[in-house]
Structure formats: C-alpha cells, structure tokens
Image 1 (tube, rainbow over the protein chains, first blue to last red):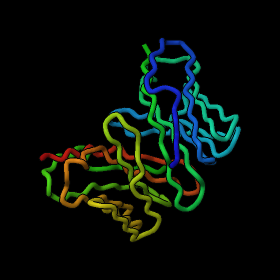
Image 2: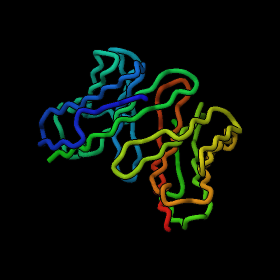
Image 3: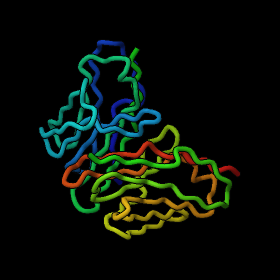
Image 4: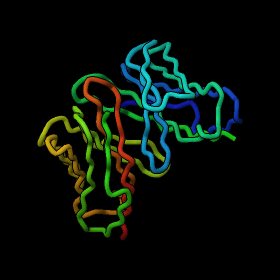
Length: 113
Length: 111
C-alpha cells in the first residue's frame, strides 16, 4: 500500500514564525503536491513537484515555498506565517501514466495565532 | 482555465434511496477523479475516468463520464449509513499535473 505521511497532525504557530510542513512518501512516486483545504473552497493546489529539485506553482503559491531535495520528501515552507494561512494542509503523491491516482497524507491542521 | 463545479453541496438522504451527485467542468480535462473524505480523515481515491462513456462501479457507487457534456456523475444506489462522507470530483488540466477539485458534496445518509 502507498503510504504518505505528514510530520504533524496538528500545529499551532504564531504570526511571523517560519513554519515547515514535511511530507514523505514510500512508493517512489515522481509527483508530489501540496494543497490547502478550507470549508466551502474544496482543495486548492499550492505547489507541485514532478521531480527532485523541480517545482511548479499551483493556484495559490503566495506566501509559500517548497523544497524537494530527495524524491520521497516534499516540504512546504511558510516563510512568515499569517492568520489567513490557518488551514488544513494535505500532501499527495502520484506516479505518472495514464491511470495515475493521487494518494493523500493524513493532513496537518495548522493554526496561526 | 479549468473549473470544476459540484452539486449539490449538501445532500441528506434516507437509507435505501438512490441519488446522483453531479460534477461539471469548464474546459478540456483529460481525466476525471472521484474521492471520498470521512470526517477528520484524508482523501481516498474512488474512481479514475479516462475516456468518454467510461463507467466504473464499486459496491453501491457508480461513476460515469460524458466528455462532450463535460459532466461526470456519481450515482449512489440504495444508500447505507456507511456512505456518509464528503465526495469530491477533480479534473486535470490537459498536459499538466495541475489538478482542480470541486468544492465537495457532503452526504449524510439517515437511518
């Protein structure tokens, strides 16, 4: 079974702090994704990566950056957390190919005070 | 730019009844996904639909895709309480890895 793990289930930070969210997948997937999920808005793509050290912006990259130094690990960084970044953050990974499917991690609920 | 709309947003139904969730998308999407999310849990993949006319079934859930109408449906047959969850559809902008999700349909099946 594909396993995608995220470093924390719950996180509370203060405005202005630098925040790291880590995601690790164990199935050698090429693609990894970071989403945020907010009520009434569904999932919105922040960034994705299709290879080590490669990244592309999603729909809402402002205020975020990412790092992918190893194939299995994809980090989301909030350089200076703000209250409007309070959300559920979901990481996903997928293979490439016709029937590719995204596999999601359990999520990190981040609260910025 | 691909946009994905689901309706209804909320659905309360009696056990044993049938219902359909609709997913419309705005431009070409080379595939259509359905996911399930239980409260406090992450998303679980249900179906991937790759071509016009594709139909997939798993238990009481059946998904179909009409690319000409830019419409996918998730049909629930004889609902049971265990199907209570939020269901998302998602498309993918052709030629990219950019997935666009609908806002979700929160389904509650009443005993």
